[in-house]
Amino acid sequence: RYMVELEVQIPSAFDPFADAKDSDAPGTKEYVHIRIQQRNGKKSLTTVQGLKKDYSYEKILKDLKKDFCCNGNVVHDKELGKIIQLQGDQRKNVSHFLVQAGLVKKEQIKIHGF
Image 1: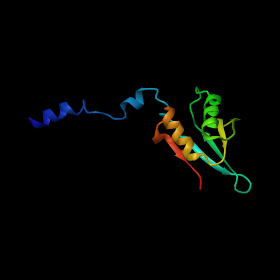
Image 2 (image 1 turned 135 degrees about the horizontal axis):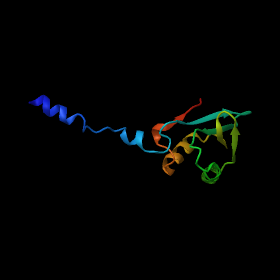
Image 3 (image 1 turned 60 degrees about the vertical axis):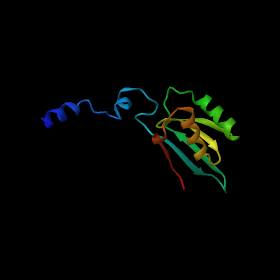
Image 4 (image 1 turned 180 degrees about the vertical axis):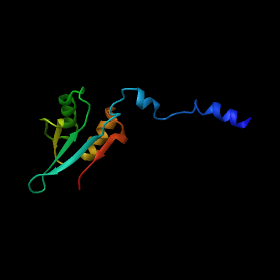
């Protein structure tokens, strides 16, 4: 008797990843990589790679530059697609900004660098 009730409950069990598989949520398949590159001296460069292609990179860049008071540009790479570059070490700022704006989830951001 108990086995029958248990078998009935298994198919209706809650799957926490069901909505991520079905929906077209931002960044469900790929990670967004935020890296830092050392320039000369103590100057550095922050790169953001892996955002969805249908986002307007120029508008995101404009908001990032305005919020963090730094310069930046969008670079077109043949293999990697579009990459946002920002002056300085903006890794924490950029990750916080992307989550706040709802562009990606916190679990999909990978921060690289020393």
